[in-house]
Image 1 (cartoon, one colour):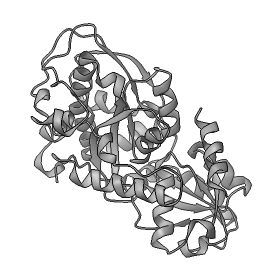
Image 2 (cartoon, one colour; image 1 turned 45 degrees about the horizontal axis):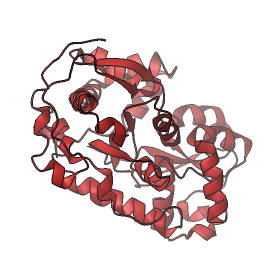
Image 3 (cartoon, one colour; image 1 turned 120 degrees about the horizontal axis):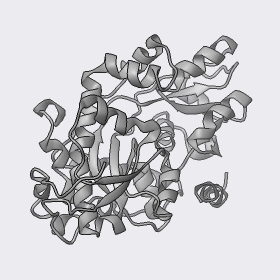
Length: 351
């Protein structure tokens, strides 16, 4: 597929109140923030009264974690919890100013935003070591390995984690982009594309696989496991939000809660399985446990060196395929926030 045609099609698809409260050291993210990151002012040590943020919480995950973990109230108002998760959708919401802060389990959306000319910065990092995605085949498929992707139709979302996982898998298998057929879709179209036979293979989130195989496994659908990961689970925000001192302080106050919520869910898998997967996702307890068994242990490094290197490798991989222009990804990170998550979690979650 011609890269310009691909990009054009993808761009078509993208198209609790509180008063002032202390941040417990939030301003101490990095003394050299102005030199290293994008922020031009030190973070405030408290959130001004009346500050609000619109925060992404796909399928209400964040609110549920905060409630179950009994975390203290945020020192600002969340004016809207936006049920949004896919990278392209987040970028659109940023552009529309309907979203101030988002989480994405991929490093690729900030790269895509940069390529589109939208200025947004990464403010928190959670490193993932185990794959979050499995390659699922359409019913009746004879594909058993990534090498078997040659000549096949592969669901590909350039602006999402699934896209970079696919590109990394192809590279590891020694396949060039012109040896496969990349079908431009967004991740919410993958299941339908598999079911209808529009694509031969699509990367599905671990949480999607049990239900898919239950329905289509008897008809010959199966999964292909690889060791390919997308290293980054991250929080990011538009530069315009981070340039507002009050909103930047609110973002800094949110990061510790986000980290603690992830740690709580990891440490209480039985409760999380029941409250989230069973009650809100309509999965069985057995299905929920199979997903949780693949869950990554949260990891919040005090320094982002590994994350930056990974992000650069990802951007270079996309540039090699003609999907984006080559650039220095260090511009995507706001180092004022670098150590905030690590400071509030036990040592075992820092390395």
